[in-house]
Image 1 (tube, rainbow, N blue to C red):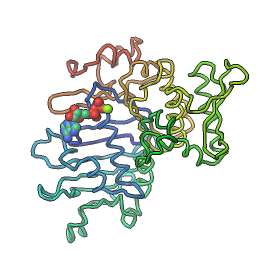
Image 2 (image 1 turned 30 degrees about the horizontal axis):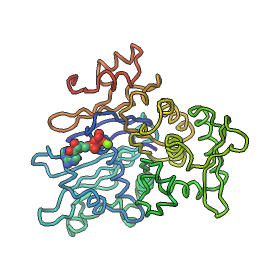
Image 3 (image 1 turned 180 degrees about the vertical axis):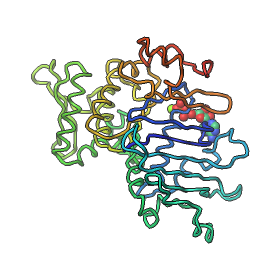
Image 4 (image 1 turned 120 degrees about the vertical axis):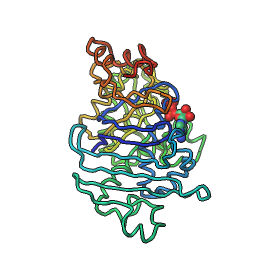
Length: 379
Ligand SMILES: Nc1ncnc2c1ncn2[C@@H]1O[C@H](COP(=O)(O)OP(=O)(O)O)[C@@H](O)[C@H]1O
Ligand SMILES: [Mg+2]
C-alpha cells in the first residue's frame, strides 16, 4: 500500500498542501524550503500510531508543541490538519482515508486537542470524531483512536501501515565506531546505529536473499565490488564482509569498518528498501556518496520496488540523483518558497518543465541546474 494523496493545512512552513504521491517521489527544493518538514509529516503519523510509546501528545511534545508545528502564517486559524489517502497503487482509488485535525487546548495548558478524526474505508465513513462519547467526555479528545487498540479495531490496518514508516539518515561513523561509542541508540534508530543488529535479527535465508540483491546493485554501482556477506566474529558480533576483485590474495576481505561512507550508506539504504513494505523516507541520500553511486540511486529504487510494494520518498538537492531519463515529471514534488509559506507543486503541472522534459533534458537539469529558484516562474 502507498499514500497516494496528501492534504495538509498549517503544518510548519506549509499553509496548504494537496498533492498526489507516486510510488517513488522526489522532493526537491532549496535550503529551508521545508523538505525535512514535509518528510516529518509521515514520521509524525508513525509516532502517533507506534505500538510502544506512541500517541498524539507525545508526538506533539517531541516537536516542541503545537505553537512550533502550526504554520506562522496560519492567521486566526488555530487548527493543523493532515489527511492521507492510502491505496494499492498511485492510480488506484483509495482503500483508506485518514484525516486528523488538532489545536492547542489553550495558552495555559500545553495539551493538544483533537478538532476532528475521521476514517473512511472505500468511501464509507467508519469514524467521525468528535462523536457523542467525546461530547459527553471532552477529555477523550486528547487521544486519537489511531493510537488506541480498543478504539481502532475497524481500521487497524492503517495503524499497522503507519507504524512501519521508516526514516533513514544513516551516519556511517555511527556504524563504524558502534563498539567504541557504545552509545544509547536513539528511538527508532534514524541514524542506523543498530543497523548491523537489524541485519543479524532476520532469518538467515531472508538475509541471504536481501544481501544478494544488494550485492547485485553494488556490483553495478561500485567498481570491482564482488561479494557481500554476513558473518559473525569470534565474539559473536555481526559484521558485513565485502570482497573486491582487485585485491591481492591475502587481503581479499573488508569489514564494514573499512567500507567507504558511500558504500555503507548505500547498503543501509538498500536494506531499508528491502525490509520495508510501507514507506521509506530518505533524507538527502546523496550526502557523502560519489556521483557514480548517486546516479544509480533512482534506478536502484525502481528495481527494488518491482518486487516490493513499498513507497519511497526522497528529499534531494542533487541534479545527479535526478539524471535517470525514466524519471517522470509527476515523480518530482517542487517546494517553492513564497511569502505566505512554501507552495508544493507537482513538477509536471508546470508548463515549462513539461516542455523541457519533453525536449530531452533530465529532471535534474530542469528542476535543479536550470531553475534552482522556481518562485519567479510560478504560474
Ligand atoms: N511553524 C512554522 N511556521 C513557518 N515556518 C516554519 C515553522 N517551523 C519551521 N519553519 C521553517 O521551516 C524551515 C526549515 O525547513 P526544513 O524542512 O528544515 O528545510 P529543508 O529541509 O528544505 O532545508 C525554516 O526556514 C523554518 O523557519
Ligand atoms: Mg532538511
